[in-house]
Image (cartoon, rainbow, N blue to C red; front, side):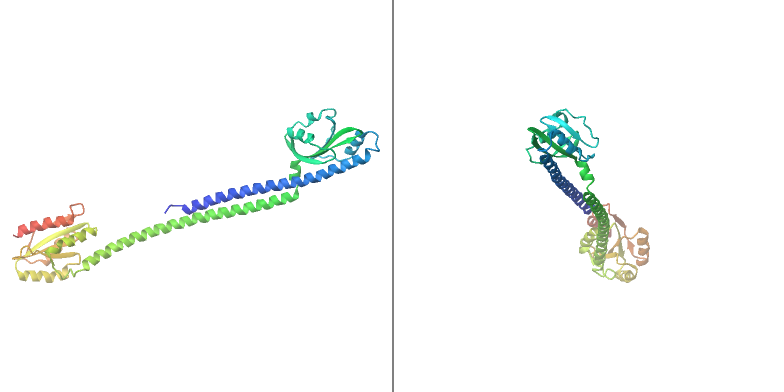
Length: 360
């Protein structure tokens, strides 16, 4: 199993989800800001319309149109977030902001509206038709509302510029939305962190489960080997049976397939049939199921048995042989096969051939 695969998938999904949420939040915030600014711009247009209506009412009764306009604009409170401009033809007549500054008087409108968006807006104004546009001026963004009108045959342009940042910053509903949004983002982040922690724990548990399964499989294999070995040894009643020489190869193949590491071979030649019978009786009590007995049929005139000790040490075999053979019985040269030697079947056949030669 690929380690941490759940954690990686969850982490990838979380990153994608966070990016999507971030994009949606940015888009919705921008859309909302634009909506707020557009609403404010419409209200600002109405403000310009009211001023224009006042000018139209007084232009026929007032002597100097320019002074009349200045008086009207002068009665309007200025603030740091917005200011008014009045221009005649291409000359700037009046700028009203919080500082009540007239330092722009006499300058051209191009000298004040230095940005391309500002000049474009000023040139786009239509007679007695209030309009607005979002412009940049001196590195700041403004909502500009304005109108072009005539008084006493002279063309005037009046504009109201409001700094966008004050609208956004002073919008209480927007602030409430931001607070709610921050709360939602924090909740989402908490959810994501908890999801990542849970994914990590799941991966950790899965890794432990995989290790346990591997251990169980290894134990099952070991149990199968043991059961197979026991099954092979119990296939015959080895304590009471002397097998024929012709099936030696079969047993050797099975032993080698069962990962046996050592086998010791002993051969006994009995003095007569009576000694052979005594050996069989003794072997029933003194030999365990890991000792096989094979009658050497190649020498029919003599009673000879090859003993195969599986996993016994040399001392164990020596002690057993002293107890089960008679005084007149003859033990031939023993030998021991190790896993690192040649194949067990081949080794046994070589040993058996040597024994037959010795007996003969």
